[in-house]
Length: 271
Image 1 (cartoon, rainbow, N blue to C red):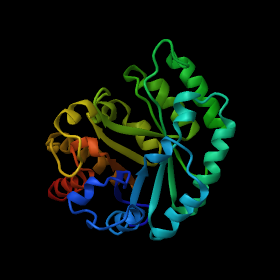
Image 2: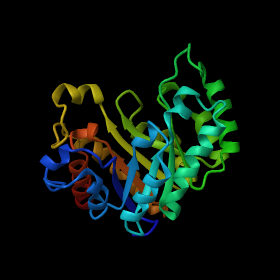
Image 3: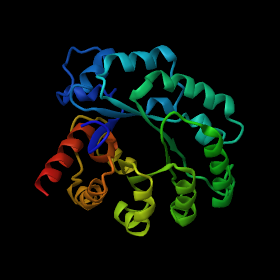
Image 4: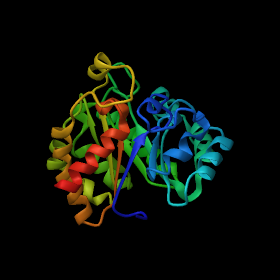
């Protein structure tokens, strides 16, 4: 499919519960999961890099065991986005880039996923956040597009999208419990999303709700058909403009990320 069209993947490949679902063979060692995953899907969002910058040797192995057309989206370490909130993090950023760049052409996105900032945090206001974000984006010089996701609902607005548009960053369109629904955001800021020239969708769901139902991730336990149907016209709008769509599904979305992808495919093909 190249760099065009609709690309679907999960947020991590490392769940042992996927053996129960039959995604991985029962006797498969975890070190072989990624190569097996890459025979089914051609992209993945790497969650583990949020917790620490990966060793270069690990990243080189990711590149080695995946096909040439496979693409990675890496979360930027939380030390940068959460602990330091983009301030005085040059050393950490360079260390992360040095490792991430070992993927070469397989590195497609770097995701800046921010947490919720309260009034006593490093970014108590949208203005302070945008000041830090703008300075960071000016200095970052990443080898691939940067994606930005915020978790402060009131911050999803023209000031944020205007800055991302100015700096050439990609806004994430996220289905996540306490944020505005994707159709609402798309309806107000369609032109900002289209201007990015890339579409990055995240299906994260409701962690608290689903963990009351299950703590294992081998099957879907929430029907997401209504939410997925809402997104289909948005995906179609991107594709009609010739914009590639990259969509990533978390286990917390419906209970089993690969099953959520297959559900999305069925809905897409029948729409």
